[in-house]
Image 1 (cartoon, rainbow, N blue to C red):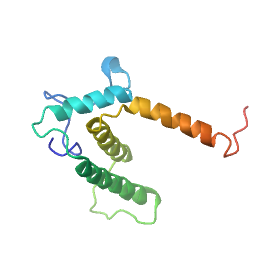
Image 2: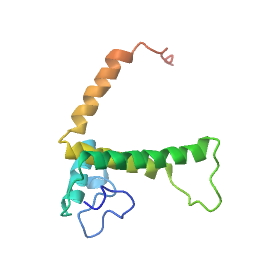
Image 3: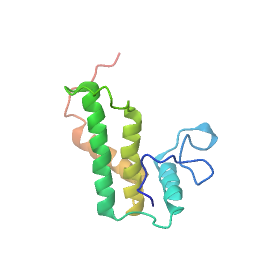
Length: 133
């Protein structure tokens, strides 16, 4: 794998992972994991080792933090800095999380279902609920 994702264009004639799911519908996590695997599997290097992927995740989270700081923090962007799209920074983080999950053989659909249940059980009464109406 070249670097686990990021700035390269993913798609075209190669095994792509871009765009919407089959039939124009938004993809679920399982489909996203399959597309990421197809993308990475076309390269001889394959998946990077876990610590390399963790370093890549921290790099992408840093880019997300920088963009959020430019948008909402006290650090304005320098005039010569290129515009970044917050959605793409989030997608870069998601891509690397999908890479890590695939490399570790983790089904993120199942993991997310379990963590949402954990939060529901633990935090349902932690904060006041919105009034219906």
